[in-house]
Image (tube, rainbow, N blue to C red; front, side):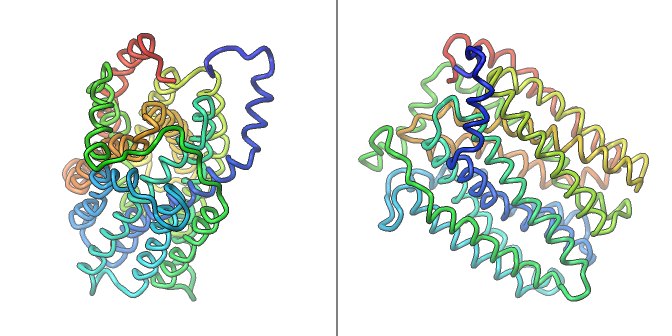
Length: 421
């Protein structure tokens, strides 16, 4: 068990695992997963705000992320059907990644001022394909890793995920700020970056079947839910997943408009906010994987969740101080580290709960619950920020994180009764 002392060699085992080929696959598939999100989120909102769209319209645009909360509906298809090319997991990975390349590149033919409904439709398609890719990538990661590898595997996946977000955020904004690059050219480049995921999937091994896949549609659709809800504390687990990152998600939804309103330039946002934050994430991701590997998932959730809550309060401080680059850099660095730590433990926690017969559907159910705050609470963030001002908005996001933390002692009791790993 990763929570126990390992006769003085656990650190060497950790480093050997960190450098293994399977962790490279986790890293690069994480990049493929992280790239689409900001292209229909904060990066698109930056473009929309520059074109003069109001905060309410920008906030409501968060509803295009609805597929992330509903992906458990079609996840049984990916558990049940096996594409003719690539295998049960790799086949679906290739299909969704190719569709993402095409749909993201299609945004390069639009403009928020003249094609708002077209952009909304394309963004919804991108979210659907991205959510579908996440279904199968989560299943692939769970089925490729042993239980004791979940912490570092999740850490590498999230590191890659943040690299994808860096490309879709910092790189996209930096390119858009250049004289010879338009937003349309940026989205074409972003679409082509999906080829990284396609090539990784092509060369990655198909995970071995730990259990036979569902044999009927009845088993594929109902089996995952019956299996999950029959376990002790199922509802507590779902409520915790719903609440753990709600404050962090709400704050992230309005970060780009906030930066515009306090006067941060696109280049400063790209270089200071994103790049420095990524440097911080490197250390944070490795620390997260090491802590989960050494002390276990539930203990890590408490430590990292508390840091995550405090980091959200930092944006209220930034709203008070204004466009002060040292403060901006410090707040973003702390937020990036704490968010990466929390995400590492959170993803490992959800993976540890799945039955490998129904990995895609059960993981999709759990991550769908995780995405509900980002879509529904996130769609109201524009109204809240307008009504309360930026300082009040970020303070509310901080306080909303408390209920999730208060559920962790209950998770600890559940773990002691029936260990998660």
